[in-house]
Image (cartoon, rainbow over the protein chains, first blue to last red):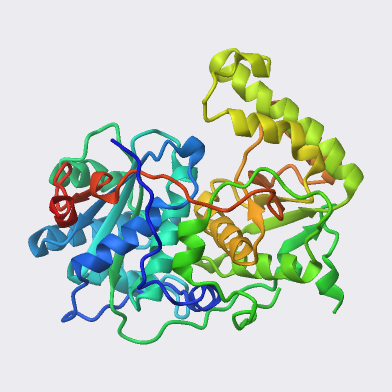
Length: 215
Length: 215
């Protein structure tokens, strides 16, 4: 493979500030609006530009657009999502999820993954490659955001992994990192709520507050 | 801790496209130009806005500005960098690094970390928290880029970890993720070279090329 230089695509005009500060997990997608191949390319080109260890670029992306594959994968995602809830909390149905819990929307996504307009699965050709693919996934989601496309970073569960690899012919030595559904949002982007950086940042020593904590 | 909503800072005006496509590892910094506290806050606010698992926000950042601490840490970084080269290749000095190797510039950084204008160390309060801090680190580096500040994602080595934790009073149960030096670059941003996304992306099945591979 030969490396190339790419100019910034003219479509990614949103400011860094607006993209980052209005990014949020989008789990509900319009079903009648597909993402163009041109936009998928922009999103993946953006991913390729992220930092990665020694510029070895071990990340590989599997774009799933085929409706039948998404339906089959959606069922595996649903099984994986509930397997994780069983492991962590012993839950087996939505009625057991406490009202107001952070799991309510993800449970909805587990039901709806089978209808996602587009799913991108992220792998690396090396083990322990997280540092060389997760920055690219963030580029991908920010580029999508700037195109008005929503996404959310999700994972799978060991229980379904062989079947997922099998259905897409993924070689066994690939390391799986993330499952990112994408689509035009039903509803709005942002705002998100976060802890103030004054409380998650230390200054020269652990537990020393930064200057802006005293403003 | 109470969560807040933050508007995008007016300073982050660079387009997403320009920031991502001109981001590159910056390892040589101007020594006479420090980064303002206001810019450090913007960078860390940007980090806080990244996706993280269940919005639990386990990431914690240690900003190191004290010159004596950077000097001491720089010596530990140098030791860690060479410990890793010894593990991987048996190298003990620069003369053993092949000319043109991807390790030439990082070896230079190992020498110069002691002079970095600013270092941010990233941790999580949970183990296995990479997915909840690495997207934030990418936001941090893109926000820095858009302010004209260079940075590079680096790691440490088990050999020095106790001493690093000790010198900054980092609690033993924190998980270390990255060491990011930041500063105004000596030299230019970009361009970077990458494999074409046509060759790192598959379409519905592994090894199926995307449509733009045939353009």
